[in-house]
Amino acid sequence: MVALIGENGAGKSTLMKILGGLVIPDVGEVLMEGQAVQLGSVNDAISLGIGLIHQELNTLDNIDVAGNVFLGREPRKFGLLDRATMRRDAETLLARLGLPISVDTPLDRLSLAQKQMVEIAKALSLNAKVLIMDEPTSSLTLTETEQLLKIVEDLRTQGVGIVYISHRLSEVIQIADRVVAMRDGQNAGNLAKQEITHDAMVRLMVGRDLERTSRAPSNVTAKECLQVRDLRTARYPGKSVTFEARAGEILCLAGLVGAGRSEVVQAIFGTDPALGGTVTLDGEPIPLGNPKKTIDAGVCLVPEDRRHVGLIVEWSVKTNITLPGLEKFAHFGVVRQREELAAASTQSKTLGVKTPTVEGLVANLSGGNQQKVVVGKWMLQNPKVLILDEPTRGVDVGAKAEIYELMRHLANQGVAILMVSSDMEEVLGVSDRVAVMHEGAITGVLNIDQFSEEAIMQLAVGKVAA
Image (cartoon, rainbow, N blue to C red; front, side, top):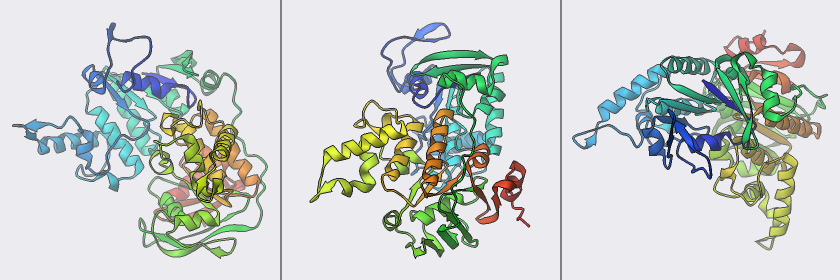
């Protein structure tokens, strides 16, 4: 099993898309069992036994789990769709992944983590000789991740070649036989099994030693900027959430996947319905269920699923960055394009977005650079409260450090940062306070001097703080 590592924009996903038949290479060749092969389409790759699990979900929300697993390869009997066989085979794959859902469930009813597992089941259904996994655990819980790594080990013992791309370097250390690093579209070096360490991988990826995440001096005030009182969501209608976020602090909503954290921040922002409760900003109430008024009040949300709900990927970097505040660049209804371009270019440069031009499509950017664009568009709004839901999902160690630095900079400017995170190292290393949720309720709030993995996990599994 070979792990492929590198910063966002290094070319990892592009290389894997070439192997998956999605992108035609300009030069070079691909060898399969010693023979040069042509990969002109996805079907070419599948016929050669190459399966690709994409970093961004490649599923259809309007059909069920079984339909997604066998999309384009549906079993047929007498020329008709063999639904029974498709359901049975899909159930076998879900059982193998330990995913307790019905194969008849529409995808739009599943969580992001569950959709990711369906994507993995689809790849496993190919019986591939070579399986490429591009950030397969980025949306998974610890339990789901452990289950997947067991499956990876089983596939390896069965003779399947695995190319494993991950920014979670602890996973790489755990399962990789070799490591290949990429930087700026080229090979940056290799590591044998006995050479694989966190620091060695970071040096290959970024070309230097990277300082470990550390908490800068806090500029937290006593002022309660955002106040949430008795907020109830459709996910847990019988539970309510009450907390406050202070100006200048990074408050983390921690907990296990499914605890209701994303539903809470989406209800605050207005994209999910709130069944009750109030949200106030600097003492002024914010109407629930109205994102436009929430943004106007100064509350902005960087969503967990950046590609589908945080960006318009078919549009340019420039347009995505300026869209929420387009009226700032308009005069009598006409957009002043020079000003718009200048603002987008400055924001892109400030955030270190790797793109040849801000006129380029967001779809062509790596995951980490797409995340920077989402953050950048809200920075132009000068928010009082910035909510970030899993801000570094699928982001490399270098980009993570940049995002953490940006969050701390905004906090030091007096912005209240509300972060949802499932990354324990991130929770402990970035937060000023941690509010832990379990099944729709906050079980405890920890200050810095109370931080520990054990304390957070105890609250996350439902043990209420004394």
